[in-house]
Image (tube, rainbow, N blue to C red; front, side):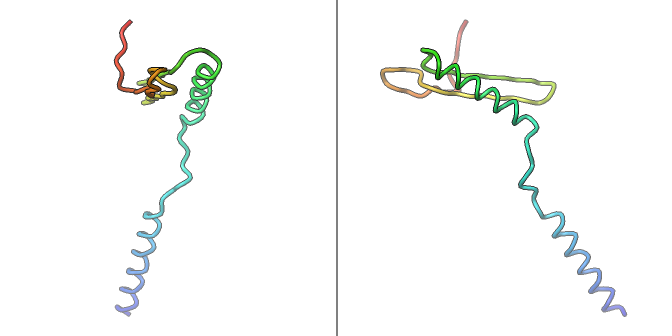
Length: 90
């Protein structure tokens, strides 16, 4: 009877480990629709104007949301890509 109890406990532990080790690969970022919309807008600006490049930053500290996106070039002659580490002055 003691062997059966140990075997049952062992099987129970294995089942618990298997359940908690499974990853949910289909988790959806709740911000993904907003990110997709912002990418579409920045791409539209880039594609439909003479702007050679774009750096877009959106930060919402209440929701813990930060989004940084770069597209295009920073120098038309050298075709250097935009870099999110550039510093801008106004």
